[in-house]
Image (cartoon, rainbow, N blue to C red; front, side, top):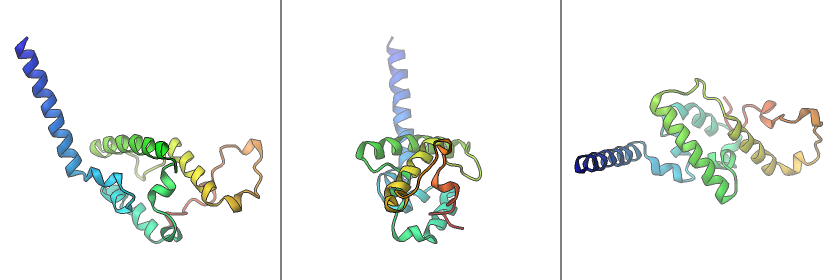
Length: 146
């Protein structure tokens, strides 16, 4: 029984050590900030970061303003989900090239477009059949103009 306990403690220690090393190596704490430079820790995000830097939205919004909900719980839930997904995808190299937004994130971006541009979109009417039409359908390069 002691051998099993030692093995489990050793395994747990190795996992914690690997986790801490990965967090430090990947500058994981930077993802807790609102600084767009944290999003570019992973080299695959550089084109999006540079495109944002050339866009009109640079003066008005950072990554979190568009890509996370504006409520405390919503923001940290989405950051947690995305943090896990991104770290897994980038560590294993299993992500689409070019990067594609997932449905959850597309809904978050849409809600933020509408919230920030409420005055303009409040005059618009969308037919029920057009449900699922997102702002980025027509404004696809907004925020990441190339």
